[in-house]
Length: 398
Image 1 (cartoon, rainbow, N blue to C red):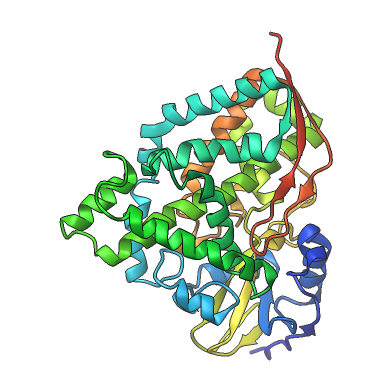
Image 2: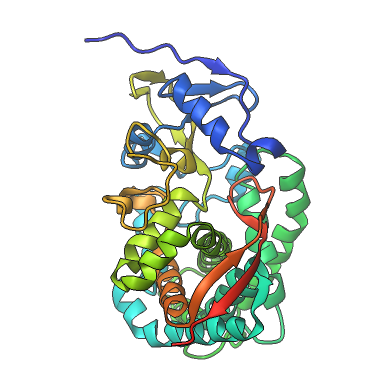
């Protein structure tokens, strides 16, 4: 039996402004250092290579989520009980309440609705020609679709949803200025979700109204309702905005891949996977170590915590061939961990795929060329995303 590896302590910090704006040099340094390192800045272990991240995500009994998936103990305790901060068997129950609306059969039911929205949005932007990819494309689409599916009232909350979702994801990072600035927003979101949990506030027939009705019938505990509505909200907003804005940036800066997609639309599912792999919306989450164990040969004691960097794993040269290149027909692109993996894989990823693939299909139908300028990147603890990206669509003439 080989002896366990020594875990190197490093002063690399994934949460500085510089590391967030351009994380990939730091990710490479972390991967090169060891299978698992110890981040002295945050007193947490960190796995940045694909094999270790994937293994931990599939060992949910050892690398548990029920003790929270962020860096801060206080906020981990406050966020316990949601579908992605819970463990089996409770996890299967609470996740199932949300996932039933997000399974492939449910997506088939709303396919025409989402596709028509995508077509209308792209045609409107072709008519405008120049626009901001974030606000006018990446925000506009899920903001039109998701609140409607959940049954949010038209006259309130909608304009705050993205800010609330962003604050929620920031809270999974350290207790830095970004997290603290979002705490009042988390209070706003909690109050709104509690109010929407009362009968009559959500549109009859919507996903959200169905949950409220089931609570009234005693099928769901009342106390679960705000968290369940939040489970729909946050994962379906901020991560989608990140993916959709990166979509236009990557296609606009890789004209060869855009032409390839136009010539062969059957590559749309593969192209969306490659977008998620190369510019993963989620930087990563932590897991609590429930028992003494090893990861990549490195010893991890019970009670420790390990940060799993999805964005780094998806560019690990030990697993991927030419990981820095954008290849919409990449073999095995679906193996990315951009949506997480295992039992805690993103519950909303089917909706995200439907949104992304519908927009790619609409782009193929209506756009000849995508012209982009240099993006500015958001400073966010958990989401890798663009702040602003100026885009010009050149519409198809035939």
